[in-house]
Length: 541
Image (cartoon, rainbow, N blue to C red):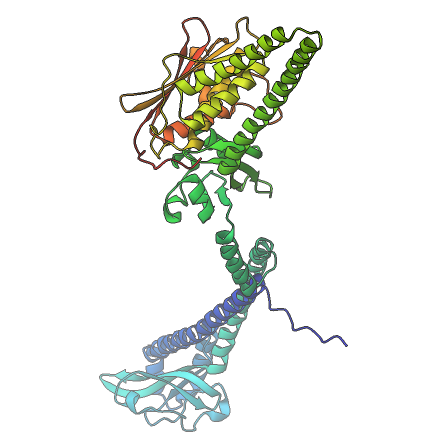
């Protein structure tokens, strides 16, 4: 049996809509109540002022004083009072004796009877107002004296029924409630539209779900070892995780978020990739000491909202790939040498079979002396084992491609001369890539040759590689060291990364890298590295 699931909490947009609707209703109701009370008070004050004005006007009328002195005051005062009532919109005008006996009343049956209400203050000569229940019900009334020569000869009371006042206020409140209802409807409609938009932005999630998503987001952000960078529509950093800050070599998150990509001090090619509007897929870029694979993807949703950037550190992988390429080259060279050795062995065997043993010995001895001479030449010039092995392997590779690789006579590097700051991996990266670049340039020329020079001078390690290729255009002297620049067709693995890796390693080791034109044509690449610990602590390839 399937148990019923608990009701899903209302979404954040729904909660906001309900809260705003209630708030608008409370405000409108409160305003309506306040207006009702205020309007009623103002209506009562207006009725009091009106009754007072009418009562005083009647009391000051000469005809009223004259009628009071007649034998039958009611005969003249009653029609006069009814006429004034019709013109002034009061509910009653009562003219009476100082003792309160009525001379006039809207109901003729009440004439001659005693006035219902207070008259003491008026008998003393004062005008006063009150709310009192008389023969017509509750009314707001004013009583004022009729004076002659300073003596009170009569009293006048004018009043407006409370019922009439309430009816006036009710008409005003009815109109107010109509306006309030319209305001509530309009506010509710606006709130619904705003919250519908909010619901789309929050995907209908409630506050608890948004809070959980934020917690998961933060945990995932800092758990991912790859670099993650999010840029807004103006290419400002909106978010960066710990891996991204480490790979890009930037400061704390608080100092980076909100800054433009162009202000982070990144290499120009990498900055250009991050600022590009089109996506970038598995692009290799170099920072000061790392090789990064960069992927960018725009945030979908109509207008440009930003870019998501992922960064993957392939520094070690790139170094291993370089070593693998070298090993593959060594293997191909050994395979070629094995083939040549087999041909030479067949030649020796054939000479022996022909009975020409002395010529076989001479041929074999000459081949051995040639191979040994090459090894002796390299080891004599560069006894440092890693560089010596590299040069021997690169010599075999160059020969396989029809390029002569020689070590110049001025080369001299003794074993143990290089400090620990110059790691074998960095030296292989620098010299190996320079030789590969030179062999590529020299291959196919009339006198294909690459000359390698390596020596120590004035606390510096100098490595110079000269080729007989087409040389480097002076306009491209700086561009050749940027990632992606190459004058050769791109291969399966891409071109233009070797010299960029060379410059990265040289800069990390506080060295210098230059390219000039060779005297006999071609290019000369020269690296100078200090024979001391570098300020950045090199050694990581």
